[in-house]
Structure formats: structure tokens, C-alpha cells
Length: 190
Figure 1 (cartoon, one colour):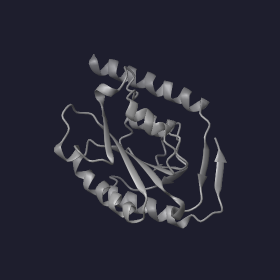
Figure 2: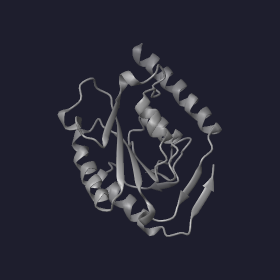
Figure 3: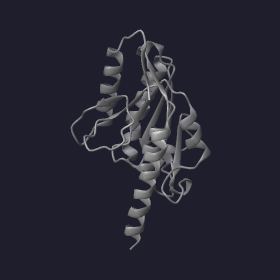
Figure 4: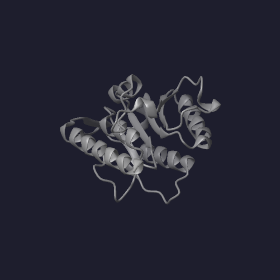
């Protein structure tokens, strides 16, 4: 019975997201990786082992003088020690969601409003709170995993990878394609 109510709430939450996406307007803007100053990463933090990959990516971007901010969704009550006291990582948890599993924390709203040069979505399980933040984000360019059955996709660049997806490989492919793009300015209005 609880699972039924959860599924109904998720379905309504997805419907609310679709309606909000229909009203959304944003300008897509990207020229090349050398112009990037800020990257936002949305991450399903339930896989603690994946944090090592994100740390390596953070270091690689720091060497390029690119500021990286990671917002993760962690569904359990007690955070693993690896996630505490890291200045570039913030986590939202289940208690920071409303009844429809949509994020309501000031941290998630701040992330949505931030005009990242690039937003990289690492939400391979399609967690609704992260999907909401990614869809509503004001980022200049949104990168995500290609999903043929995904409805209401909000990505500007999609990376197609075989399952299960390795985060290191996904981030390397993302960087590879971003480095290939050299345009005066890629603009598109949604």
C-alpha cells in the first residue's frame, strides 16, 4: 500500500515538473571549453564509491581554473563520512523534498538559479529530485546521459553510453565532446 502511494506521489511530481518545464525559457550559450569558468554537477550520491571519480574530475577542472560545484541527492538519513566537510559538495536528502519528491531546500533553489557555464547531470537512475533541478536549472549548457525512453528531456548535449555507465568514462566522454565544440557562439532559445 505504501508503495502505491509513493508511485502516485512520484507520478504527480513528474507531472508538476512537465508543466513547469513547459513554462520555462532559457538561452543556451556555449562557445568552447576555454571560456568555461563554472561547472555544476548533479549527482546521485547513493553510490559512495563514485565520489572518487568526482574528486578526480574536480581536480582536473581546478587545474584549468574552472570552479566546480557538486550537488548530490542522498536518500538515506545518515551521511557517509566521505561526504562531510567538502566545500565543493552539497547534499540534499529526503527530508528536503516536498510531498511530491520535489526539492524545496534553499541549496537546491540556489543551484537552479546559478548560471553555470555547463551543468553535467550524473543521475543515471533518474531520481526525480535531481531531474527536477536539472530541468529547471538556468545553466548555459546542460549535458546528460542519452536515454531513448526519457520524456521531457532538458539536455542540450547527450552522451550515449552502454549500461552500466562508468562515471569516469562518462566524464571523460563529456569533456572530450565539449573540447570538440569550437563555435563563435552556439545559441538556442527554449
